[in-house]
Picture 1 (spheres, one colour):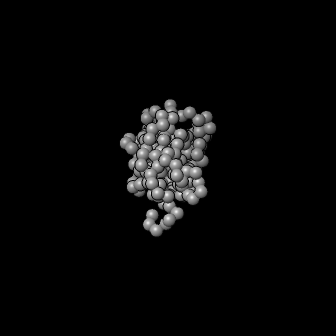
Picture 2 (picture 1 turned 180 degrees about the vertical axis):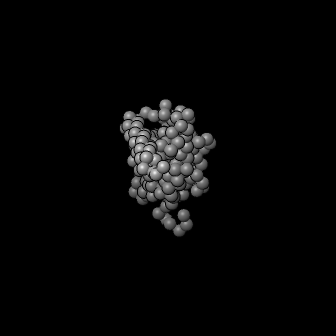
Picture 3 (picture 1 turned 90 degrees about the horizontal axis):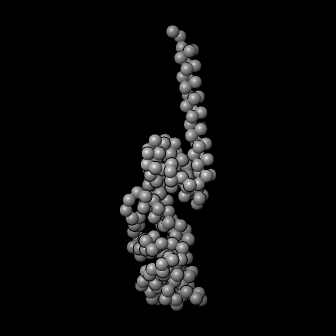
Length: 196
């Protein structure tokens, strides 16, 4: 932020979400250095360069505050509780993609992979399906297959809303049943073939 005359000066206020809540006095030059998107937005010749307020309609205040705090401090705050952390990581990853902050995107992807558990596996599976995140999708599918009883006991099955994901999980379950049957058949054949 030193020695670059093209960086804008002064603060900006973000007006966030439907309720139009405010995040005030955020340094434009810091935003430009931390995000390519903001570097272009506040760049020379853009109308936003001198804007005092920027409207961010399609997110919630807590998630956007965590995003701005990350840009200002390089600290990732995913909130409290397993479900909240996974939800916040999903939203922050979308914000990181939108505002071109690759390091935050990677941190969120890592946090999502670490947060797969009985209560979060199905919602994360649906989110991975929706966003096209193949790695998280595969991890969640494997987790559900390996921990079906725990996922079911946590209410994960009742959280399922996407028919495509439901079909995929059913296919996985049928594949496992087929594998178990083949294994049982091999074991039985091995017993019959074994000398007495």
